[in-house]
Image (cartoon, rainbow, N blue to C red; front, top):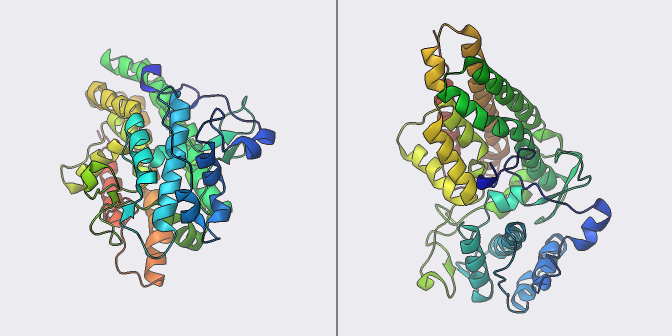
Length: 390
């Protein structure tokens, strides 16, 4: 699992030392006392500075960005997070959207994005996976033990929206660490081994769905729609940028089109789809799911592909249909995955679709630039089709 950048304890989240809460506020803007400290300090002050009207001036007054080829993976991801937040604040804070990013920011962002293997846009790894600290390093990164590192406007709703995702990632670790042995058990047609692995996956999914149900506790649909969501859009299929975005001094100054941040860029669900043999019809919706992998951590992307290529779980379940316990465990996993997608669709309806209708917004697209209600419903229904009946 280490070859894929995955921790048995934290799954796709980084398993690394974290700042104690007493040091968090004063040190979060620094990366190894970095030469780009001014950039990180500006990002740390976004919740204050975005309300001043001075943000763009301050951004352009920063000293030239210095790219350090010796940074660790974690520190490089922190650089990517800082540049992504600065970039999206530049793009989306003001009602008049610019179709050009100044070279001062664009060239730094493009260079760091290439180093982490993702497009220069805010994506799920920067928004969630590498955007929290633990209060107690000896305890798991669950809600109650995690705080946000970086915000746009800040506030409980923005924090809670992201921390729910962090907790889901942490709860998924139980399923992720069971996968290697489960793949081996399926290859060897080892019934007891498969049952053990599927129990782990099922328990993990139960905990994930419990966390998912907590979203409304501190994240209000109206606040999310008006104060959180606007900052995470991309430039592809975005009515505000029909001609794309020019990164000055990069890409031959040709407009670029990138998807915005979305939970579809998490590796959890595609990994479980691959493990359980949940298939999606070859159509534009599947093409979108595959495109989302370009926005994942490259090592995590390879893990998904390895699971898809090697998993014989569904085949073995079907071959051993007389083993009722095995079938029931498999179906229980698929059913919880279905419930997760169903809840996601429910939230999309209340947090986005309903809010857009109330705001008389006739061009409703997801932050990833898709007709999200259609996509989410189809992915949910295709999950239910994977249930095995005897």
